[in-house]
Amino acid sequence: MSKQYLLGFDVGSSSVKASLVDAETGAMAATAFFPEHEAPIKAVKPGWAEQNPQMWWDNAKLALQKIMAETGAKGEDIKAIGISYQMHGLVVVDKELKPLRDAIIWCDSRAVPYGERAFNDLGNDYCLQHLLNSPGNFTAAKLAWVKENEPEVFDHIYKIMLPGDYIAMRLSGEPNTTIGGLSEGILWDFVEKKPSEKLMDYFGFPHDILPDIVPTFAVQSQVCESAAKELGLKAGTPISYRGGDQPNNALSLNVLQPGEIASTAGTSGVVYGVLGEIGYDKKSRVNTFAHVNYTPEQTRLGVLLCINGTGILNAWVRRNIAPEGMSYQDMNAMADTVPIGSDGLSIIPFGNGAERVLENKEIGCSVHGLNFNTHTRAHLMRAAQEGIVFSFCYGMEIMRQMGMKINKIHAGRANMFLNPMFRDTLASTSGATIELYETDGSMGAAKGAGIGCGLYKSGEEAFASLKKLAVIEPDEKHESEYLDAYARWKDVLGRAKNA
Image (cartoon, rainbow, N blue to C red; front, side, top):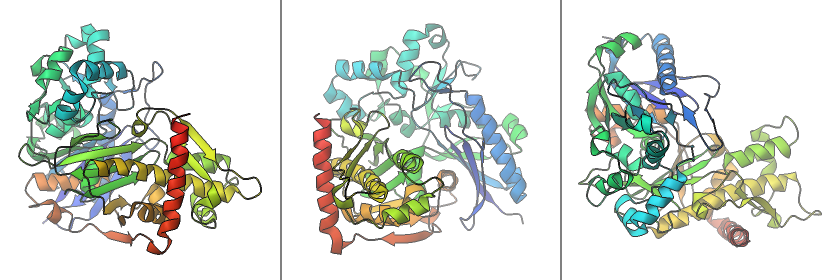
């Protein structure tokens, strides 16, 4: 008897990753991503960012071919398919299910004025209480831009969808979406527990422009004959899970219940926590969406804190301050020779554009307290990492004000979480225990498919094989030193914000 697998796709803006997970053991069997160099993003005008959805499909096909060849798996060996995807994008298709234009992706900022106008016209109270967010620069606002600026495109739209919906449609021939997808687009009303007719009517969108809604964990559709032939899959294979990249990252770390937190620290940094009751930040400094296990009967919300200036600051330090050729590992060792608090040096890390956590202010990166007789490049390295940690803790204070208890942070062992000093500082400043795991988005999507098709009875069963690599407890002995450094950093931030 041949092995049975679960297939996960992770559709990012840089690449598309595919993974095969052994359905019996939960272990990764093979993984690959395409392209091997970062995928192009079209920027016809400043602030624009578009990609051709066909490129996602082509890269998914190439990644799938590689892992099927590596494992020797056949189409009939795949039990179910799950999809993770870049959030907040807009794909528009005609009645033939062909894209009418390139997708407007998550980092495109052209729709900001449309979201802000809707926030003011509909009222802050309505938007925050019903949508849990300002319409901002999300999918609904992007569609409003298309309606006003490309009416010939808008008039031919049959359905709108998010990037993951598009890949599911290419697999099945059927357009559909999830509550989570609609909530990412600010199209779901959490009070009425249905798509927001008030927002749709405000923008002048026909209600039937939304695809049918399917559950996040369920047989949403099946691989059609044409896709099966093109990809080497078996027709009828269930597509049984779909989630945006940050909710899916939380799923891959088994973060499903209130008070649990998932974090990543790559180019940008994310803290994503689960809330068990309706909540929002009155200043909209964090975003709130339906988590993967949200249903109208069970409130499970994902509160998303995103910090733009995270790993990109560390990379800048490596390029411009570290000796030429120094590795990140050697940088970490050098930074670790400096005491907690960097001898009074503080770095504000917000040099990668406007920060939502700062109410969309762009205050830049700045260095404070520099003493020419005391501080060295090692101090700058440590202060940069401390500044990144403190920006996380600053956002987590907002999440706590919303009622979230933060006692444990789950993270993958990757990027800045590879650095013991970074982990110790985060645990000791936040007071939360950090647990590190070996997992990624495509693996999470595959296991999500296992839940959706009924192979696993629960998230606990699906992630029973998730390997815990390390546990980092807060350092109570040096707690006051971490908190003093954080307090000094917050004081500096306050002065920078008010400058």
